[in-house]
Amino acid sequence: MPNIREIKERMRSVNDIMKITNAMFLIASSKMKQAKKKLDDTEPYFYTLQDTIAHILRHTPHTSNPYFHRRDEIPNEKRKKGFIIITGDKGMAGAYNHNVLKLAEEEMAKGGEIKLFIIGQVGRMYFARKKIPYEGYFRYTAQNPTMYRAEDITRLMLDKFIKEELDDVYVVYTVETGGVKEEAKVLQLLPFRRTKFSDLKKMGVHEIHADATFDPSPEEVMMNLVPRYAKGILYGAMVESFAAEQAARMRAMDSATKSAKDMIQDLNLSFNRARQAAITQEITEVVSGAKHRK
Image (cartoon, rainbow, N blue to C red):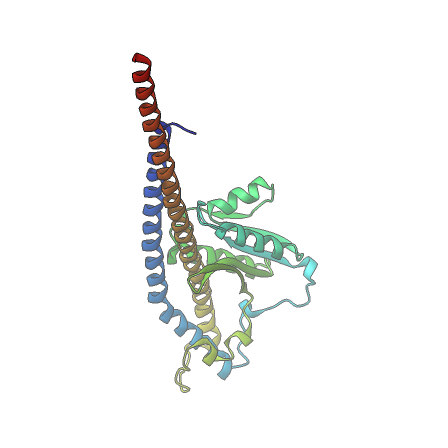
């Protein structure tokens, strides 16, 4: 049985760790609320963009746009696929990073010429360790998702798509589902699908006025709107991932704090037993000494 000093030192150590995990829980909670507020503040703007694109496609079906070109003539094994993989910059968030990396590898295994674009230090280190090359790494983005960073990444993807350096662009990210767990998802960013804009009711938006006109032309308006909408999709994925990471960290730190409390309770019991044993030992020694003197 460990002595009283060892038990007290261990209790002090566990208590210090519990304070850290509890502080991390509170920090993650605050960051998650901020992220959700960011998303709520920007969603109306991007829903309006989505509504406008749907309106143009419905009322001017002849309108063409290069970002809708699917290039169906290219077979799957020859398609140049770009994956934007969103991970965290650090761990201690349960299975958050593991799940998104696992899903990314499953999608990559489906074939094609794969090009990786990574957001998050954990993802960069993972693929570097496995000696899987990546074409782009966007540092300082996972923990600070902003519209500016989303615009930079989107501009790069759109440029590569137009130049036919990429035929498909996917975003692998994480969403929080019901506050109890997070789920890794794959979203196709490019090319856009006309069917995506065909049912506004499912998207939760309302149709704009049917008499709207587009100047100088629907094509020019689309060339301006689509990149902004793509930026909004990517920004939403970045913020969703950040919020899911904080939620996962909250759950992990809450579990760690509860485990620390249980450990302290067990150590308290061991401490009391050790102290009782020490007192009994002292009493025995005193009694033995008294008998010996007699």
